[in-house]
Amino acid sequence: MKTLLSALELTLGLSLIQLFVTLFPYLFLRKKQLSIIRKLLFFTFRDYLFATIYLFVFTYFAKLFEWFEGDWTIQNAPLFFIGLLIINGYFFIVHPFVLKYDKRRLTFSPEYSATLSENLQKKVSVYITNNDTINAFATGFLPQNRVIVMGRGLMEKLTQEEREAILYHEVGHHKHYDLIKFYFVVVLQFILFVCFRQPFFDLVHQFYPSFNDGNLVFWYGGLIGLVYAIIFSKISHYAEYRADQYGAQHTSNQAMGNALLKLSELTEHIVDQGSMTHPSIEKRLANIQFQVLPAPAS
Ligand SMILES: [Zn+2]
Image (cartoon, rainbow, N blue to C red; front, side, top):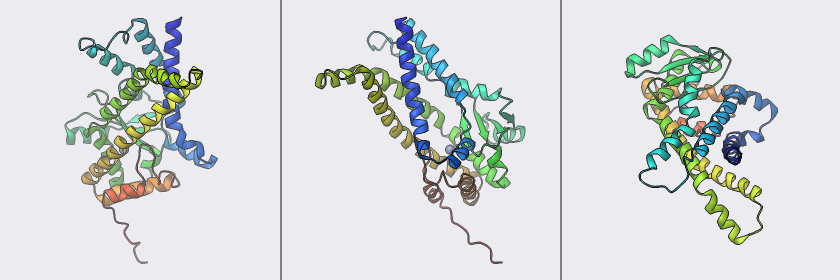
């Protein structure tokens, strides 16, 4: 019972951090903007629910078999690390496979997948969303689960070359091993959350012995969330710049830039100022030396 509760506490703590970090920027948006956000975010509540259940099951087993008990030694370090990779692996290892069989949400694109396999000698499966998502993303890093998802709502508004610019932007994420980097940042967050909790509690109790433990978990979660957000944001912005450059190299700076401008228009400029994961559109355009061409004289 104690194991169950402590696994539940850990799972909820981590899920709340994730939820907070993900949703925080959207708390200040108006209703109309929220309907755009829904089209921008492909992931649904169900995806996060499965991720939480997965996290809970493995945390429970880890606790039950005392995976993370005892001291960190060189001998048990590999086991610790493999355990951490499994526990945090849902979105990086399991979910891409789920997407491959999700016929309700996605349709396989044989042409794009074949083009990429020929050009890259790397297997990447490309899917188009069945709904009008106005976004695209890359996920999975194993040869069997490298996936690119292209939103139908975005694709329909782009020219052939702009579509390819977006496609190659996502290929760039695979090419530069960005998914593995993100995976390790998530694992790092888990290590921070688990390993520094007791020292943090002890430190606070030293100065404020009566501080309520429940409140402390909340503050601790917020602190870790903040550290995580800062590190993740740095790595993610750098990855976006490089992916834009990759997209521009394989098409043209003009195509990549125009695709970004159309994304900005479709989202009614919500993406313009940037976010934790993406730099502002202005900086992204400057990064690929995009020139706004004057409108042709009529
Ligand atoms: Zn990207």
